[in-house]
Amino acid sequence: MPISRKYQARELEGRRVVADCDLQTRSGHGIVKGSILTIQSAHYGLELKRDPCPHYGQFFCVSRVGREFVSLLEEDGIEYVSEEHLTNENSVRISRRRVELMLKRMRDLLDEATYASGTPEDEAVVEFGWQFVDLIEKELNPDSK
Image (cartoon, rainbow, N blue to C red; front, top):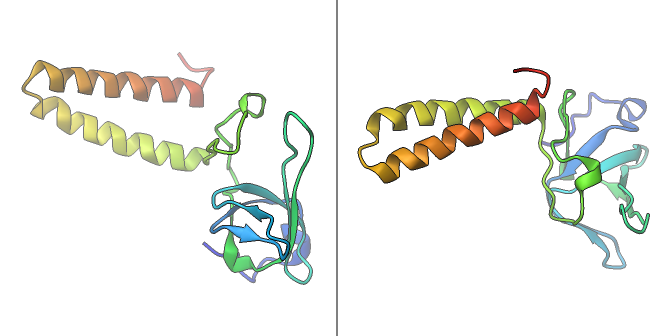
């Protein structure tokens, strides 16, 4: 969702955003859709900086990006890929709220599937689903249980 004009430049600086589409500079260098970026400046369009590479320390900046090409990460957005385990460009990061919504939907589906399962294969899939939900919940709340 595009960044609202209600946010002033000083409110956006330092905030994290996700690219809604592929972004490219005039020289052809680009940032792929879904990349997590930091707003360096918000005057005359957004100046976005990619996090430094964990191996080489290189980073990429692109300037004069319109607000319609990126979305703010949620205020409570905890990125669920530990920075120390990032190894490539294809790592996925999502907010805590989105993970909780997905888990709720998955729990509902598993509840329905539990009553509908008829074969041992169905039961094995449902059991695997519950184990997966438990694993994700433990990652979200390591202090509980």
